[in-house]
Amino acid sequence: MSESDRRTLALAGAKDVIQYDHNHDGIDRRGFLKCMAWAGAGAYCVMQAGVMKSFALGGLGGHNKEELKSELSFVQISDSHVGFSKPANPDVVATLQAAIDKINALPAAPEFLLHTGDISHLSKANEFDTVDQLLKSAKVKDAFFVPGEHDVLNDDGKQYRERYGKNTQGSGWYSFDKSGVHFIGLVNVMNLKAGGLGSLGNEQLEWMEDDVKHLSKSTPIIVFAHIPLWSVYPEWGWGTEDSARALGYLKNFGSVTVLNGHIHQIMQKVEGNVTFHTAMSTAFPQPKPGTAPSPGPMKVPDNELRTVLGITDVNFVQGKHALAVTDQTLA
Amino acid sequence: MNRKSKFCLVMWGMLLALQLVADAQTAQGAGQDSKGATVDVKVDNFSFSPATITIAAGTTVKWTNRDDIPHTIVNDDQKFASKALDTDESYSYTFTKPGTYPYFCSIHPKMTGKVIVQ
Image (cartoon, rainbow over all chains, first blue to last red; front, side, top):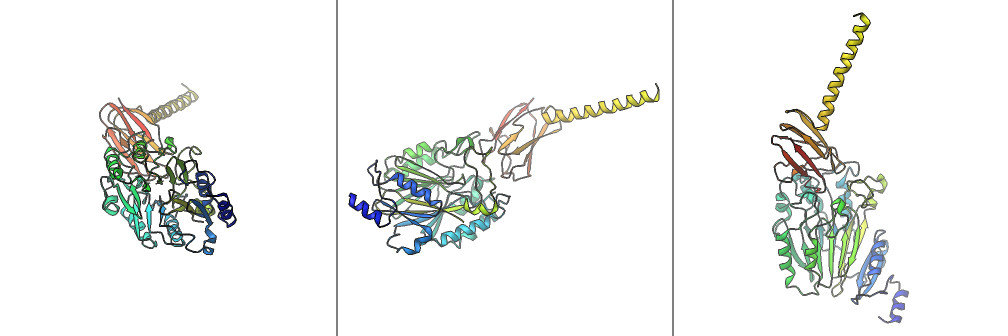
């Protein structure tokens, strides 16, 4: 991009233009991360022709659809924990409904919803029923799930698979394609070993290796799983012991995005071609790593609860490398 | 023996008896106990306490979840496994054979404990 183009775009109000392109792939990672840092306050970022554009969520009405266009947009929610009722949040159904209201208020209806697990709190039938009922009011065409450890209690995930595991294999892994993007749903909450972390297991890893083998390396990949696929904080079990193998199968792909839940807070990291992002919970927050004796539900003042819960909006523009991932809190 | 001495003797006797009972209860809490008794383990703040207990064969261990999140009790070697325990729910297991029984919470596998049966 020429210097005069940069100046023109800057004057036109585009908040960020590429300044650092060390990987020569048209992605300004510092700009991307800076934009994602704004996202907590409600920014909507889109990659268009290599330029990161951001719009304050409140002011989106002032822009036309052309400016906000993307080929694919979907929304991620996580850790709804329906069935939980303790001081950290006595009404997780209300906050899940608030999250769905946020989804329905997005400028363009996302094509589908991704739930990265801990749908229920105790794997009870009525908990799953409640979530299914609430999700009916979400203005999305489809919904995809991966289980959290709270969804596979007492029955090795049998009930989870009956409800959400059609067309999946093993403990519930699968892949699908949307608008040229390849999605891989992984299960890392089964067969956990004492003292261990999340685990994918050999059978699932072999399936994944085979699944991506014949894809063109320019295919954008999105991997979603409940427990983070990178080492956020092993002391609290926030990591997956065999994720390096999974990521190894993706090392030659130009754009890989990993979406996780489990830790009930946003954490993000860019490592080479991979962008990692964890979502907020719609139920209750958890402490930052090492700031509390244990990673349990964290009580915040009542009027602050909705500011630490939220949804994640993801947009993809065909031909561009990075997906635009933005987070919205419930308040 | 005069009345005062008798009184003192009775008082000392009672104190001694109370002390023995207290000792027995403490011993029970520490896990050194006779057969047929129950030892309590508290599950709270993502940990088991006491994390390691030593008991006699025939003793029952009762885990009670006081945390605000569910936990399970699962033996590393699959010899015993509870269902998911919500707050205030309990699980008991009677250990009949001597040995070392490491266990963990299958939902939060970093939580580990051990029962040593003598």
